[in-house]
Length: 402
Image 1 (cartoon, rainbow, N blue to C red):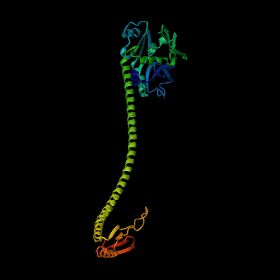
Image 2 (image 1 turned 90 degrees about the vertical axis):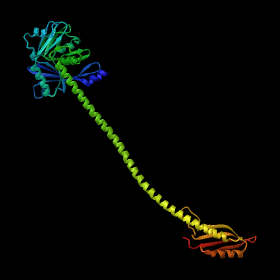
Image 3 (image 1 turned 180 degrees about the vertical axis):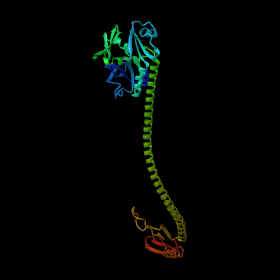
Image 4 (image 1 turned 135 degrees about the vertical axis):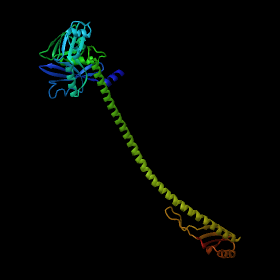
C-alpha cells in the first residue's frame, strides 16, 4: 500500500508513450495512453499524428510522454553474441564508429544482441521538438530495443510494428526487415489485446516501470535525470495543488466559523442592547420605587409619630366610664376593590365604644376639643343600651396635619 502510494505520487497512474517513426517519406507519431491498475496495465486510448513537422505537429502529443525514436535516423543491427562488452559489440556492429557523436542502446537476449544507434544531434532535434510543443519528456529509447520485454508473451514468430517486421526465434529477436505495407494486427499478451501500432509503446512502458534497465546505453544518466525531473515536477504540482486545496479548505472552515460566530455575536449584540435597555428601564423603575419608598417611609415615619401623639392624648383624656371598642385612623370611605383606587378619609379618626355616664362622656368630648391638633369632634351616634351603658361613635377632625 505504501509503495503504491509513493509510486502514484512520483509517477501517477497514467503513462504516455510517443513513438516517432518513418513511413511513406514522412515522420509520423503514435501517442498511446496506458493506465496502471493494481496488477495490470491497460491501454486507454491511442491516436496517430500524421506529420510531426506539420502545422499542428505534436500539439496533441500530451503533457508528458516517453519518446521512442524509430525513424530512419536510427540504425539497428543484430550481432550473434552476448558475451562481449558494450564497446566491443559496437565496434563489431559498426566498425570505425565515432561513439562520441552517437547514442547507442543494446538489448541482449539468449543468443544475440540488438544494437541501435542514432546521432546525438538527431535525438536532440526530437527533444527540442518536445520542448517547443510543451511536452515533458520522461525518457527516450532507440528503435525496438525494449521489445524484448513482451516477446516472451507473444505466441507468434513474426511481429509487425509500425515500420518494421521483426522475426522471433525462441522468443528472441532474430531478424529485422522494413515494413512496406503496414497492416493492422492484434496480439494477445496474457489476456490483454494490443494492436501492432501500440505494441512498441506498451513494451517501453513495461521497461520504464521495471526497477532496473533491461538494456545498456550511454544515455542512462540522461534518462535518469529526465525521470527524476518528471517526478520532481509531479511532486511539486501535487504539493502545490494539495497546499492550495488545504488553504482553500482552511479558508472555507474559517469562513464557516466566522459566519457562525459573527451571527452568534450579532445575536448577542442584539440581546445586549435589549438587556441594556431593560436594565435602564429597571434602573429608572428602581429609582422611582426607591423615591416613592423613601417618601412613603418618611410619611409613615411622620404619620406614625403623629398617630402616637394622637393616641396618647386620647388615651390620657379617657375617663373611667368610657370603654373604647374601635379607634380607626384615616378610615376607608368605600369597600376595597381590586380595580379601584383606595379612598381614605384623611385627617379623620373614628372612635367607637361604650359609655356608662352621659355627663362624663360629654365632658370628655369637650376636653378632646380643647386639644390643639383637634379641629372638631362630632358625635355621630349615641344609643342607650342595657346595663346602663350606651354605644357611641364619634369622628375627630384633625387640624394642622401635613
